[in-house]
Length: 295
Image (cartoon, rainbow, N blue to C red; front, side, top):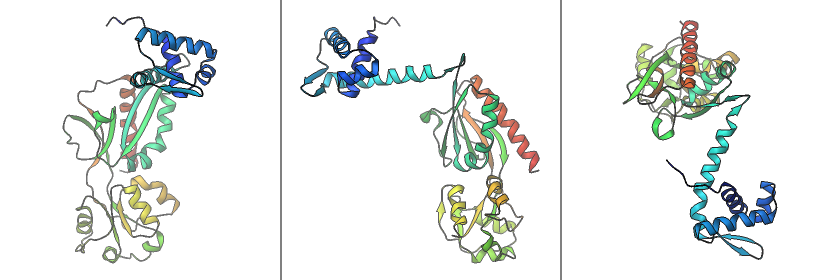
């Protein structure tokens, strides 16, 4: 594409003046004189054949034409600034956008992410969390880490490890649970997967009660409710190892039920970048360590 000559100085002067609604403050930001900013804006107005500002006794009023021009300029300058900031120490930072189930992000990924940053200092990791419902394409993600069976349309999925569910509760409640039947007399905190508690009771050899209680879309929130004494949670102990180690919560029974595993997923149409390859290799190695540690 052949571009016409772009009057970058004039465009920058206009964008700064539009943000500040002041030639004087724009001049301070750009380290030039107020007259220079005013001159550049006039040159741009002459080139476009429109008026971009109404000059008022105290400041500026941007016109409709100026309002139409401003968003594209701000987006362009922001993108250029972002690109320049990615150059560091003679290297370019490669952005890696990751979405993860909140429970996995807090309970497993964050404690290990420093290691990835140490090994790959020029990968700029951007992490967002979700409740297992995510649109990779719409959110512009390179990878997502999800829980399930790995069957997602147009998705390449690599299995990481299982995270079986078990009863977790505060010590005061754990002391009341001498046998699995005792769980039926507690408030059962549950997720949106309605079959989890029935399957746990089946694994424990107990006839399940009528299950009522608060429903949570995240095990993090569910376990937080358990920490506050609201009941017993059915959640993956692997993701709450720090709580268990500190004694804040306990796992009263060695009874587990598996509902799937965590997966590293990406769009099949997404070409692998060096940062993605580095993250995938690292994730699979860390996942293998986890499987071996909890075998």
